[in-house]
Length: 215
Image (cartoon, rainbow, N blue to C red; front, side, top):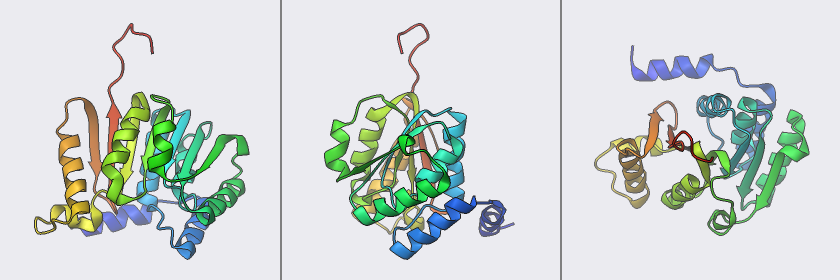
């Protein structure tokens, strides 16, 4: 069976909750480029498996990725950052339609480069990075700082439409993503893995504190 056949089977097997499917349609109409259902379900799994209580995403879009995170961790509080008021308005409507309490979603309008330095260190169980591909390296560095010990940084779209595997592709964005993947997977200071389905998902879990130390 070919890799494309496997990808089609997995994609077709995923059942996206109705409220997320509606948010996806709104995102497409806005041109907000939502994460795929395959990647969204993987994010939900990580959130569920980690028992996430605090999550932050860089790049709200129309709320699809955030809804998937809350699908996996319904008791968590999500902070979401975006520069586009129209996207944030669509996300607010999507979260409200999902039944999520307004106290569980915090919206920040602004450039991530300006907002992230002000966020609390080691405060989040999940950090999802899906904005400004040209700044992904800086955002991952911030994400690792914001993640608590044992927290996970999620980076969708790392395959750049397959360009990272093409040695001829040497543009800055592709080279940055290629370097991020190889350096992260080769690092001994984090636990990491990459999913190659759809747009791809890089998962980076930080080291837990040694037993007996104050968390």
